[in-house]
Image (cartoon, rainbow, N blue to C red; front, side):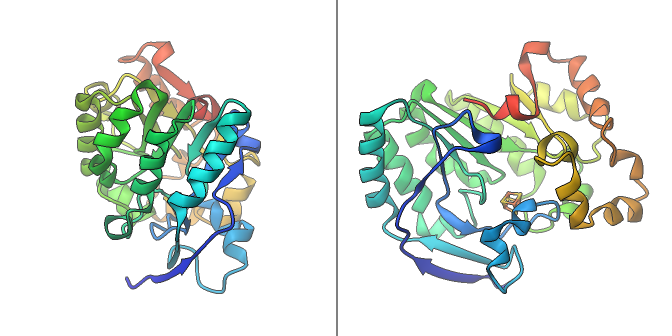
Amino acid sequence: MNHEIQYKTPKTLLNKGTGYLNGYSHSLNPYTGCTYGCSYCYVRQMPVSLFRTEEWGTWVDVKQKAAAILRKELEKATSIGPVSIFMSSSTDPYQPIEHKEQVTRALLEVMVETPPDFLFVQTRSPLVRRDIDLLLRLEDKVRVSMTVETDREDIRKKFTPSAPPISARFKTLQLLREAGIPVQATIAPVLPSSTSFPEILRGLVDRVCIDDYFMGDGSGGKRTRRLGIYSLYEELQLEDWYDPAAYHRVYDGLRSVFSEDELFLSQKGFEP
Ligand code: SF4
């Protein structure tokens, strides 16, 4: 698919951490828009998407001069008080175009120079491997959270056809962990998965976050319902997975191989 790419210089980069992210002082989005365009992404219903005529998932704006802007903001913020950053809340910081543009990498370089108290990196892209050298320099002040909503590639293709394959994400978790970077597997939103999923994760991580539309979309599932993805479940005859209790199927399986303190439900799994 051809994506529309624009280059824009933002006024600011750090936004106040609010709502779901109220445990953070700031959120940081290196891009505006997201070319993964996941079917269940409710950012498509937020102003950032509604003000655009192009469909969510088809466009991305690259933030220019991002490192210089962040350097200034971060120096100021760290001089005032504790700084904890969630990257990213309304895009994935490892867009396919990040291979070329390296905006996120440049931001990490700034954060190595002026470290925040904590940085949470939320992604579904294996490209995060490229930045292992910088992430290591943040030591225990960073956690990389890799979205793995399911272990089933057929389900991944159905719900998020433009996102990276699940096997590459598993491999990335393994590599990050072997390098010594704090990692988390994030099953969010819970999608239909196989019974081997907990065992696979057991071999990869010591920390799992689990979230679904009903706990995690900020509206008890209403925002997600408006996206109309229930029809995908119907098409797959997997309607029983679209249910506030369905996460137990995964959680209970995880509990047989993980201890309770290694498992985090909904917002808890995204806190600093
Ligand atoms: S990667 Fe995240 S921000 Fe991008 S479309 Fe998917 S859910 Fe939305």
